[in-house]
Image (cartoon, rainbow, N blue to C red; front, top):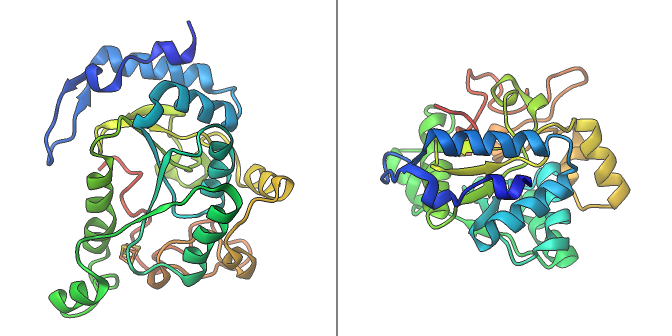
Length: 257
Ligand code: SF4
């Protein structure tokens, strides 16, 4: 049995159809079948995993990217097999200009126009509503409103999404499966680079001459929204520049809670 045939139709396999507030959850059988597919893809290359996801989910597959090197690499491989795949970015209104310019460079190189998906409220309206920005005083609320609410809206109508997370990025991500059920959003999540290292990613970026964010050459390692990202020094953790000085380490897209 191939990995692809091991996974049943995601929508049909949901044990609980869920609701806007309670995401769909899979049956035990679907969980096991996804785990089997994930195990069988552990030794596959990212390009093979992407091709598997495209073959398995077709137009019900989407991809989210914050334009990190991992996302740019996935677009590089995805463009070779399914450039029509809907790829989106959560455009909070607080991203660096360099990040948004990278969208155009990727579109020009690969013909993949990443859709900028925005919250309902503009930054100006949002800050007016809350008496100023929330990223310092209530960053969880800010991420919830400007990222999580948006991805929930976008994922309606899809069975699976791809992300560029790697297990070695943080303890939160250490258990990421190649293929698994995303309990937070009620769809299948595919992480083609889960078992890659940062060095492997950059080797591939350089080898394949994939466009990347120029901020990486200025000390920014992990890049999110401008107010919540700083450059890191030698020896600092890869994600030390995100929400620096706060207890927060994740925006919530990739954590279970
Ligand atoms: S990363 Fe910062 S600015 Fe961006 S949504 Fe989260 S708290 Fe808001």
